[in-house]
Image (cartoon, rainbow, N blue to C red; front, side, top):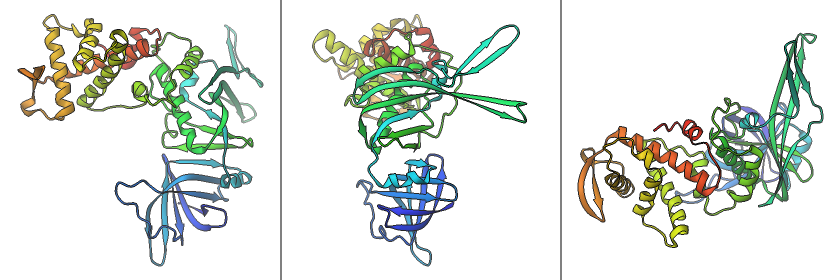
Amino acid sequence: MNKCSVYVSNMESKYEGQYDLREGYLEVMIFDYYGDIDEYTPIGSEVSYKNIYIADLLSRKFMFSSRFHRVCGKNGLTQYQKYKTDFYLATKKENDFEAFFHDININGVILYNSVLNNLYNNPSIVISENEKEIVYRQILNPDKKIIEINKNNIDCIEFLGTCNSISKNDNRNITIESENKAKIKLNQPIKCEEVLKYINEFDVIMNSYCLLGIHSYTTYIITTDNKCFDVKHKLLCKDKYCEKVLYQPVKVDFFVYVEKMYKTLDYRTTANRNKYVPFGFISPTTLEEQFVFYFRCIDLYMGEYLEKETGKYPSNYDRLSTFVDENIDLFRYDEEVNIENLKKELNSLRNQYIHEGYYLCNNKFSVTEKKRKLYDKELDYIWLLKMVKIFKYGVYKMLYTKILTCEIDEAQLKNVLKCWV
């Protein structure tokens, strides 16, 4: 752990301490601090957070978070309280440390997401090639792509690029590093606690375009007094590099897609965010969990779709039945498949998992129709895997075409989802 000075709540309450930077979180020990010795968080109550400021003059690291929570404490000859957070701001500038003690108003967010490197050409570098030479040309004042949003407190989004060249050994070794980045400009300033919502919304929209499940890594905020702070969060410490985007299911230009999503999705502000859950980095693991997860999406999408078509909200079975009919070629994977029986089996298995749990006595479940038992079916996990793949593909297809009204390449979508059925 590293030695540091720690301030609790304000600049007057200074203590000696030690901190540790781990993957995804920051932990600090505050020596001779007695503020929380008698404070305990009962089970079921909300976590109590503290403003804690950390100054490491030796390493030039200055950090702040309003979301430190107490982990443990120790009394005795060496007395300390230990706090932990997974979200904090950082800077290497000592002169900017004092800004942490005042209201931080944010009017811009800069995001580096490795997916961006594959989605548009970096305007900071131009590469030309012919039979005789390859020329790398660095642009010192590159153009930027500006997408006007003017909705939900976002003024516009700028897509830019950076390029740095490093020469060593009298120019014998030259390294060129380039990255793409995005800058979100806000109409009205926001507080630190709100910035994660903007980052998550951006990541969800990026993920919806190419389905790689990659979060932004390095992220900065720009304050109203033009200071720049590094944002640290447990989801912003991974995925710095990604492989080439091999499959592109959305047949829309990237910049056109971003503009459309920000203007129609309302992901950050909508109360009906469940509609876009498949884009939100949720990865159910077991086949049973995946079956229920995608079944719920089918219920949601088909319910909304059929209500618009018929004027009344359909039953669970009607939603499933319509989904199967619209993807009938996928469900007719075998000549012997009885579609009507298959619908009843899928609906019955859904009811079993939702109401009774995943355990099946003798690995069988009852197939019913209008609460009347028809027969018992033994669960074949190869069959269940096939159903999950069909559900997954069908859910994403509906989300793109019915909810977002985007044109897609179905073969590309199957490839990126690995749903070859």
